[in-house]
Length: 188
Image (cartoon, rainbow, N blue to C red; front, side):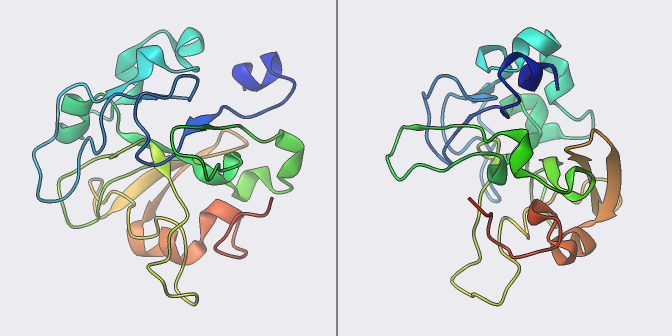
């Protein structure tokens, strides 16, 4: 909220999923992927101290869930809703944050989520929940199957209005939170 107040109500920007070395995003991606199922987490691959939110937070530990062993290694447990940005087709380009006015239902719109896999001990691989539906236009879009299950089979999510809620991974995917229950794709 402080960031948005300083930037004419715009949400933070993000580097595109898998784009490392792009300055100006909410978190800095040093190397991609930081953590994925079947791989060993790579130390310090997500650096919050080089991200645009760090001047407001001033503490790297806030970016890591105490229950996230991979996040303790990589430097981040959370992923930012890509719907907050305008994606670029250009590799290595920053995805600029949208104006808050673009979102009608802030209490139902996901801002940050604990990323991972419900059935694996892994964490955020790039700090961004990105639209993806596995080629199935009827499946829930987005990283629907990438909510972490490290909290009793569920994940904590932060909404745009700043409230936090726990939900079972299957329920969060079904709710399609990124667009507040609407289409699995973000509106421009």
